Image (cartoon, rainbow, N blue to C red; front, side):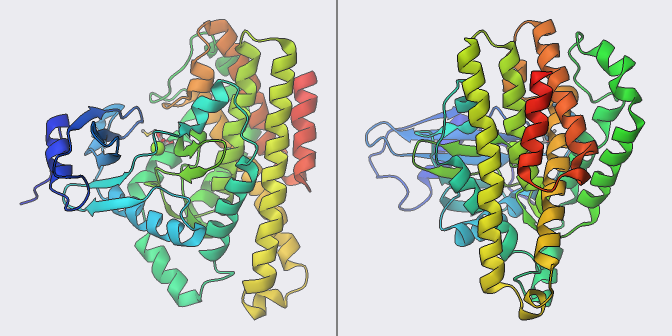
Length: 402
Ligand code: SR1
Ligand code: MG
């Protein structure tokens, strides 16, 4: 019989006390359940004497925000295994793990509460000058070194086998690539947005077709071990450091899904500023910062990825003239297209983001959502015309001015 049971705060304290060498014997531990995500329990445990803290992330057997949606707890294994790989590849750009407990479906990890969840920072208008450098390192290393460009074919296929994550992929297939494009029961719709959806958005057949093309790619393209949910709420950041967390959606999928998640979430923040009461100058300046960041992320990613390729790809791959350029152009187009889907799902689908839902006035929120939806649509339908990231930035600028 399994010993699994969802912890209560007191039990979480007892649990970490049982981990040898984690806290001092005289530690005075306090605990809060702080999970504000969609799936799991998250306990923050601190020693009042030393200030030292840890976090326990424990899987529930259902979706936290939809308790009639059952989920196996197996996702913790994917998260732990992917974290180990990302940690090695990126030299520690993920939280330290103190304990993984398969039966209890939990991971005890480093407390990063001295840093900020990036989404919150962006909502308050904070700039992170090193973000593009840091996230492009994370993306280029994880996406190159887990792909067929670098790994031996058999070793890579073995990895693919170990990272079949069907339930979490199903969440993405439904909530990102399917339900937002019709009047599905799972959607969560601002009443002020509904008229636009009914009269225009849900009638866009070309958009729905292209989203389905991207969905098929998500379902079938085992290109690299991707994080699978790399939005700005999965990143801890301060002015010096960045850590990527919440890797439970990891699987072998299209690399553009991770790059697109980062870009799409910066676009969501970009869209949110129309509904905020700040000066026009601040808004314009912050939006420029976001666009510069998107441009830098891609350019730095491309530079690093090409370097890894030139130095470490299989010789047979290196010998193929024009393949590197082809690969990167496809990847850019996938990233923008998938980023578009990530942008649109947060306006219509079950799980929203605070950037937009923080706009209290519902008509103002609908205005920002429509802008985000238009950007998302263009990202999907025009992606194949993009040759450089600057082409994309120009499209965003043009739509903003219009
Ligand atoms: C039902 S889970 C909803 C969303 O939360 C996660 O962060 C993923 O983005 C998922 O789609
Ligand atoms: Mg998450």
